[in-house]
Length: 313
Image 1: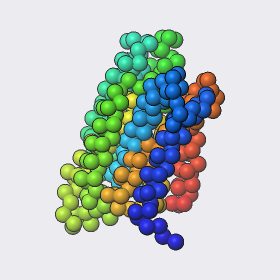
Image 2: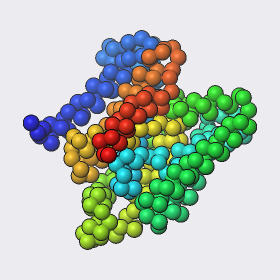
Image 3: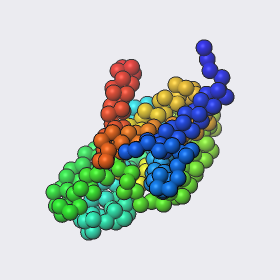
């Protein structure tokens, strides 16, 4: 039985509300969000709530970027880190730690600068088409990985813990203001909706898109810049968190079809839901210690990736 589109949206929003309430409550000790007072209220609204907002924003940004990269590269298995942006951001973060080994702020500044360096290099290959641009991204990712290994070998021991935590995905060290992350989520979704018709046309192929009046080269450049910028913000805020941008757009296309005016807002919400759940599990499963959230998303994403790869073949 086919679900009514309105019912699908009600379902997504219901899951969002339930996820927020669940993730607010769970932790080393369960706290009822409706009856919290005193110290419990401080834990709920000053510790867990800000972290939930970070997870929601970053997850939504990664999912949006994933949906855009899949259209941009003509590859349904593409995700935000496929062009090496995460690798260049990691290099920038570790380079910052070499200057100030224990400064999360300097690490975030370095990550953002490194991400934009990677974006600038990828943009230089944008005129070669999606196939060669993807190949360039793979080669660049290998280069950034080698450079990162060199920097880690030279990094003072006092900065290694922070570096490895960030590289595996960690929301606890985010220094980007939460209002900035939420604003980025809103702006990214708004830009995506403005480009939704062009995205739908590009799904049909460049020739069909041109026949429909889309300026393919200009739109591809806009899309690449937007997707890379969104990835840079997400990586700077939370480190390397893979597979959210791969899994969520696929799930939303199964639920809402291929039209991006529905897929993009659903992905922005769905990515937030997934990362909120993953982060809540990461901070509670071995409490009082924490697991890197990137490890959990990888454990979920790798089987889904292999399934999609087999299905596609």
